[in-house]
Length: 194
Image (cartoon, rainbow, N blue to C red; front, side):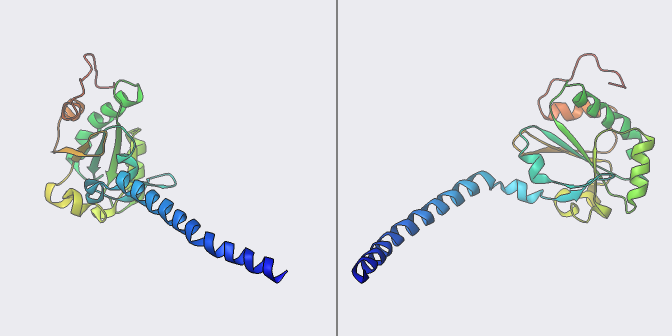
């Protein structure tokens, strides 16, 4: 009996390093695959995780960048008169997205201190795009230079999550300007409500 037990233990000790080595090799292989797909220096540069306004949950830059479609990040304030002027044109781009005319994602980041003011503005203007909250650009200013560039401010990223360009100030051709940066043809017949 002792001989069988010693033989079993000896066999187990012989197999343990091989199994352990295989597990370590598999783990190292998994880590190298994960880092090969997750390592995007620009994604780290622009990284954020912000809460949605008026709904549960957060959104991260990585989720946007890994989504496989171009995306636009629009920074604004409720007490910014130029942002007020820009909003119908930002909504026009969202309408093109909603009706399937263009395939991209639009996310706005409200920089207000008061989430209630932001929510009221969204409701009053019937805005349908996603809105995140970043009070005073606490989490985005370093990467996006919001204080330096002012609002309204728009950052455009391609389908691979790579930075394309940014737009500052008011543009009545907002949707057209964004689509041009992404080499997407602007639809021929678009009205203010489209």
